[in-house]
Length: 206
Image (tube, rainbow, N blue to C red; front, side):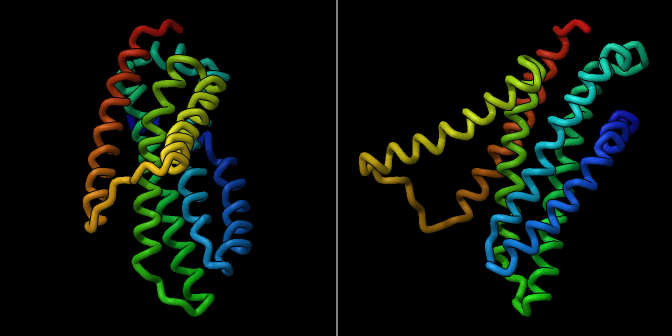
């Protein structure tokens, strides 16, 4: 299992370098404006790199080779989810680091709002990753990316449609309720996604 995870992280070495340059660029552009866009951008960039690892595997015909070794299909699938969590966490840590350093440079205090933004985006990134991995195993990388884009548009379109018809949105005086709901949805989504991916991957022939 450790070898599978390490293999994916090493394959992303060049991607990490490119992301580092992009992070510096976004930090210079958005931090002086007090724009929280950069925090989401960093986390989502790292979160979607799990798609890149699967693409590399497909190009190298890795799965057909790996399954000839003492590695189970369950371990192959689980390693991708662990890589997704590692990348998401790395993105969140870097976002907090950028926010903390940026606050010092600009002479501002590092408030809880930044921590809340990073936490919410981290959970949302887990949900999106849980959606796209089964889609990749089922339909391939390119089709899965298009489907994920459509999945992201549907909730946005629904909210806009409800606002257009003046449908009242649910509200509550306690924002912690939404946080716990999001945490529960993220955990349940990852578990369900893994089970679906394992079922799809078990039936695949390489």
